[in-house]
Structure formats: structure tokens, C-alpha cells
Length: 197
Image (cartoon, rainbow, N blue to C red; front, top):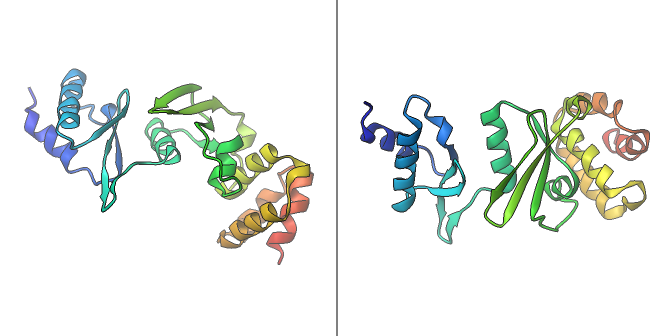
């Protein structure tokens, strides 16, 4: 029987700002892990975000800094060994093309479709087709989804300026050019001049 102290120590040693899953400790009995996690939630060492999902809080002088929904989604994707991609309002928000904070954060995934409730917010994973994940740069993959959400006739000066700023910060320009050959023509017309500046 594995003692309780080693597992408590393992969890207490996790860096602040880390998402913890009950499944992170397969060497221990699942019920035992659940009991230890519950005890650490009670004493304030960790926070329970959802069923089987916990967080080692990061503290600032203003209090607890909670993870963003995108950070949580990425942690879940890493655990499940799948790729994810923000879509719709989530993509617009992540790229700074919208200031609206969505209540539901939606991602395409190479894994299984599901919804996870995190407090008042929801993370939605939708099964995505492979062509959404063929891009070499995360930026272009996200831009395609964001522009699709905006629509061809709604890309104004403000959006163009923000996109140009993002493209300017992307270090791998050859990968950007490669990716642009695969985006819809109307998107290419908007994006290509920004890379060639």
C-alpha cells in the first residue's frame, strides 16, 4: 500500500500555476488519489475546477491568478495527446480581434467531442476534420478560423492592423508563406501583402 505522504508531497511540489488531473498519478489507486486531492482542496493547497481537474493556485498581491480557459483547454489536450484549435468567438478573442469574453470556449480537436463545465464557463471540444490541422504555424491555423468567424465583408482597418501586428511577430516567415498557399483565396488576398512587407 502506497503511503499518503509521498502523494501529498508530489502534489505540493507541483509548481504554482499548474493544472493537475486526477489521472496524473496512475501509480496510485484512483480512489486514494481522489481522497488526497479532496483533502488538499479543503486545506487550500489546490483548487477544484471541474470533475477530475484541479489547479495549483498562482498567487499575486491581488489574490489567486486562475488559469484562462485556453490554458485549461491546452492542458487537457496535452493530457489526451490531441491537437486543438480555437474557433469562432474563441479564436477572435485569442487573437485580440474581439474584446468580448465568451461564456463558451470552443475548440476543434483531433480527439473526441465533449463539453467540460468550469465554473460559469464551458469548454467545448468539437471533432475537427484533418485539413484544419495541416498548417505549420499555429498563427495561420487560428487566423483561418478567426477570419471565417468574421466573414469576408467584416475585415476592417482595425482587424487588418491587429492581424498585421501578429504576422510581424511570427518568426518563421517561410512557414507562413507555405501555410498561405492552403488558405481560402479571399483570406490569402488579405494576408499575403502583410508578409511581403
